[in-house]
Length: 144
Image (cartoon, rainbow, N blue to C red; front, side):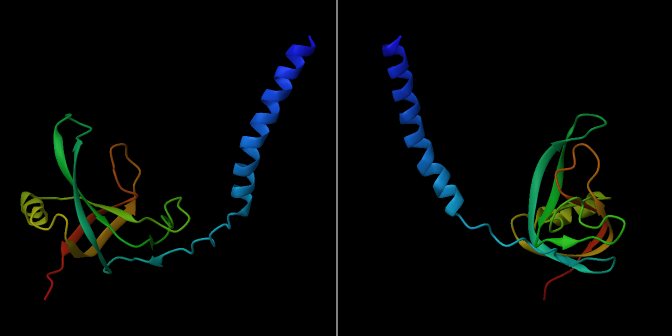
């Protein structure tokens, strides 16, 4: 009985030696200041960022479709969308293409910085949306 107690005591002591430095290291870390919400984006504003392409399955027929996304600084959406349940606002914006011409236009800019004029924007709400916000109507701004 004494041998079992000694073994358990030694095991507990060893675990405490391993856990205590990790706990004190975590306590010593300073918390970063809370992020402030991004600047607002409204209809007619310009959104700039890197264009990414992803292949996702269409919810309706299961086919793989190209989906385009802009990664940008955090932006606040107009009410009632607000911050999209995020502390700072969305940073990823899915560009919904409405024609084959828009899809072709975006293909040549994948991996590059682009700017789009936002005509209609909302928080992502449907399954299969890969971004925090969705831009359903937009137009590409040509860089000089």
